[in-house]
Image (cartoon, rainbow, N blue to C red; front, side, top):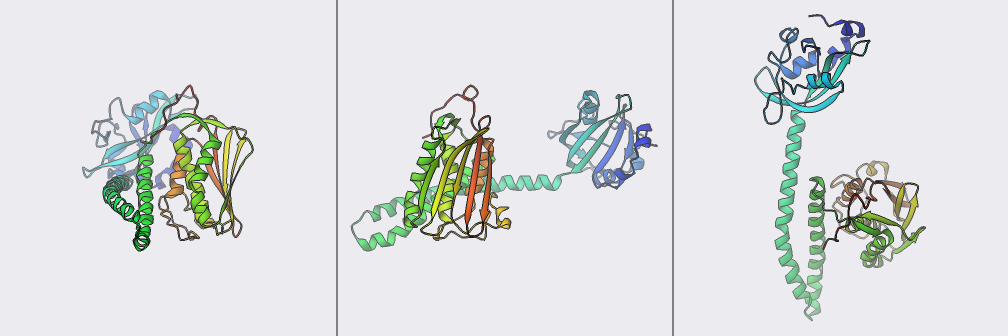
Length: 375
């Protein structure tokens, strides 16, 4: 069957060359166009499909639970009735009997008077993407189980090591000190893995309250005075506007600042300076953390916010780096509707800039009543 007038006037030859499946139905849902991509994805030939009603033939759309969508829930019908495009994932029955997940995009077609005369549907086989998604979820589950299971032996090791370290024998202390340091690093890794998993599955707990940002920054800086002093690194806090308040989660803000300050210390040479600055801009709050390190190459900058993303730079004091800190920072900043960016010059240093908009991260008190801080 030849395409309708709209198709003749518009020309659809290029649609036949697409790898994605494309078909067009008229107002009665009769199939008037079926491209080669549709043949490849579905296994149904053009000769089989042209002229048939999409609901009365081999073409079947189902939802995830297996319910048939070819009646009132038909994507093409809904697009034509609403006059609006739609996109969703459905299951398509192939000619060989197998059902595959497809990402489908449907757009109503109109004549010159603006009346809906049909619908165009583009669909793509996402079976491999679904498999990768399932594998990713299984990986996250296993990582979570592993992290939880590691906690028990770590607790025992840490407890006995601490007990031995309290003895007066200097030789014993010298032997136990590395155990305590490594145990602390292992705890940090376990916590980061569990934190990343919590963020990924959307179960982040938020204790929203009125927060003085400078107080949170001071707390974060105090957390890293010891490691900074070990490398003779000076940490300076400058605040253009000391009294900056947000309705946010102080624990999550501190986690963001902790990671940025820790990262700056790790990658700074001894006897340098880390500068933390607080300011406001037109739409919100801005915090910058600057170091005097070696800088980050363009290639490495693309890896920074990926999970377990390792760069060519190495911590200057032999500190451990597992590649989760900045990944967690990026995810938390996104949750607060903020942005994170960086500027880096080789041999000069790197500045990370985090911005929290007043109408995003600065969650409105009326929308998010203050909650008690987490223990």
